[in-house]
Image 1 (cartoon, helix red, strand yellow):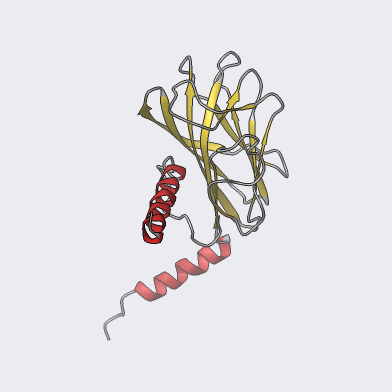
Image 2 (cartoon, one colour):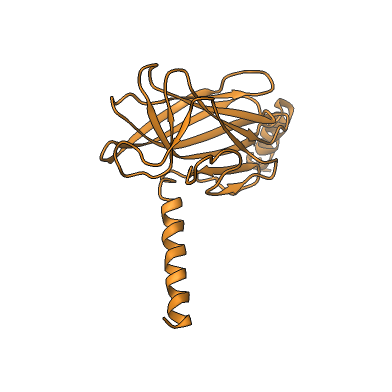
Length: 218
């Protein structure tokens, strides 16, 4: 094989690997990559895939960490036979994702959680997000599940909190205590949106009135 052919083959292989790695990032937020945002993607491709994300990362505030509960195990293939590299959770086991973040005051946090799962009984895993500094739970705004076929589902959960904590804890648990779930491709996006102080809003309104008020005729 010529060096040109080998280079082309390597390029095709790399492109295919990238597509597979990002294949379940089906619902990226429109604000990804802008100021005050983070992005982290775990694929669980190898045994013991704990710690930092292995499929993509942008987090200027620190290194996100994946910490499965004791007993949560890596499985080379899920029951559908379509996914290679998953984590199995059952009983009270959880998958925990620690996300360092922008803790600016006068902000509001928005978090998008994507994950792919399969079960043997159809129960959707439970997700939750906590402010690690106070233990305050985030509010779930919406949850959307998409059937990928063959027993696989993609879920997008959108959470919010009326402040911007310096870090969050994202958790995934089985749908019921007797419902094991195989989790694959976890993607977490966050952003901190600055909320103007009441005085600033008042000044903004006055400025708008002064700008838009029509002149009196002389």
